[in-house]
Length: 461
Image 1 (tube, rainbow, N blue to C red):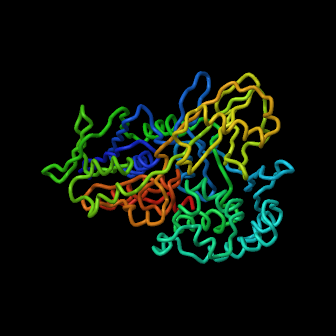
Image 2 (cartoon, rainbow, N blue to C red):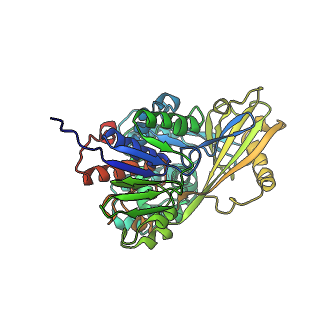
């Protein structure tokens, strides 16, 4: 006598990191999974495209050792070796706001226990005075005592908290915003203290190696599209690209019907892993108490300036800048497939609401001289190519009060769950937050179906 029963059917709408994670998780638990993505590729807002002979990432994406969700994702798709971590945190920081010329400092850690792991590096950091360094230490100890889940922290901005704890404007610019703008996509006055506390507590004050940086040495598309699709295929997931979902409804049997225009797919459980505005448009009536809150979650842009020089102008893999409009610069020569002896640099610019729509010519006139200020070897170098990529809605805006707007994975509609970096993960809009949201939505779906499954995030941690 067979005890086999029909496999539960799941549909995941959206093929970004959240959706791919949810699909893999559900398939690993034995569900019959269909993944629907409107674009002709997977990867969401972390993808690659061709520009002539170059393979270009739409933006520079990094992760930290504390990002156990994204590390699980890399392992699950077989891509961990293609996105290695630093052995030890080391961030070169160039300050050009000095008459004597650029000065190099480094943010480094050692293997001592927290918080001593950063003490020596902070002591040697040349971009802050002795008094400012001492104030950083006091603020870090105060931050370590905070609970990022405290709703009161979400109601104040990061800059207000920093000033209450003796941080000068120079300290905010040379340290707190240096990290915070890149991870939160907002300057301190525009960032929720809850999200800032989460980033700094987890990344800098949890364990010595938590903030070690990792990044892809291949195009993002090779990870988030090619390898992800192979993993989905191997897990038995049916993946449909160019399949934009236009409708979502409940059937008389209590199941779900997902319409793509050319097909209707029946499901026992559905995960919506699409942006908040698209989610709002698909939600059936009554699925959320206040669905309009989704439309109150604002977005923030990220701009990337791409420069291909005719010679090598940078001898380190990346650096951050002070005293300049330039924020972070990465060497993408090898991963892009550039040949001919030149060098390809990507300038990653977060929280650039005032620049996101500037013409390319204006951005060229702004950034090429700044790169020459930062990199003397760039002076006189030929420009083989200059172009810009813009993600106007790259992340949700981490403004004070955003926490009350972010829904959890469950809805009031049985069998319907939400995923996406904009949902209530406790993280800002990062690859880590996206993966964690996929886990949460899939786990909620499995629980509703009466299934249990081991939790890889806990194992990874």
